[in-house]
Length: 209
Image (cartoon, rainbow, N blue to C red):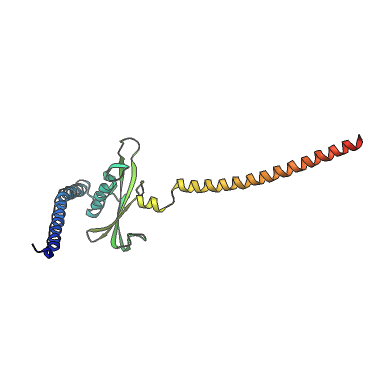
């Protein structure tokens, strides 16, 4: 056997295995994606046909329902017919960046729609949710909502209340330590002064005797 061909054969085998793994992963995720897309389209059709929503508003609402259902706070979002009236939904010509943050993508229209977030526990009042979607034509390019549970990255990048509290606590400790030193100094002074007074009293008493 020619040993020089062994590395090439191994590389070919590894390449075939990687291709097979990729095809298997696609085969596994394809049905889930198809189901998600079907649910999305069903919601859009229901909002348009039954609630007379604008197609873009219906698309934004369906996407907002999916995103909110992935949150730890909500099970799903309910969109009553009032969600699609002019007081709770709008299509605003934009022709500018969606926002000034990470989604600084230029969009033609911004769609806003409101819904009621139903909590996973089933108890408590429904939360007022507002969804904002950026579109170029019929394609959504950006999305945001008033998520009550901020993303993990945002929590990690910002100082947590516990850290801020601990920092304040350390500062308080420093102040207490400083005041403690001052108290020690003052107590030392007072002890010296009292000892001096007592010694002078003793001396005067001896003179009298």
